[in-house]
Length: 233
Image (cartoon, rainbow, N blue to C red):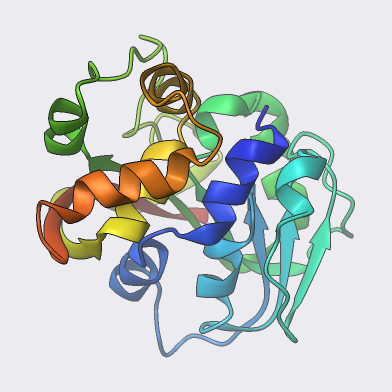
């Protein structure tokens, strides 16, 4: 569960990877009237989905994340879980799950997807890993220790209720400034704790940004992306 401090950094900056992935995977010609973004966090992935839908619902179990969600005329946010989605049957045209599948009980999720999706609905599972090791090394911290159970490439390809149309893993190159990189570092719980111990100051964001700025005004970063497109069987 994300706390208020982590939610602040999530809301402050996320790279535009959500929009890039959805441009790659969703059918531009298809009429997506209602979209559902499961595990929407502060709404970055939800806003990306508005380019493809007339109306989007952002579903998020964390009240801290939702309190920082970005408002949009097409979007309505719901504080609920993927295991019990408060929507009517056959009411959704496209579903996205961005980096949330690892945290959801899969049997319940799939049952709910089968219930709420229309026959021609598209289901997109995606995740990405921003490579920040160069900044971790520069700031004197070790790479965060991840749970061995977390899998960025996790998808629904083994489920018989859905059919895989596209399954892709590739690398993206991006540019970020010191402000953006500082927020990316601090949006991770492990890094935030470690950096708080290194920078014994109340204004940790400003201190990190200042140090990173010495690397240049804009710095290239890479991201490993994983996305899968499904339809109901």
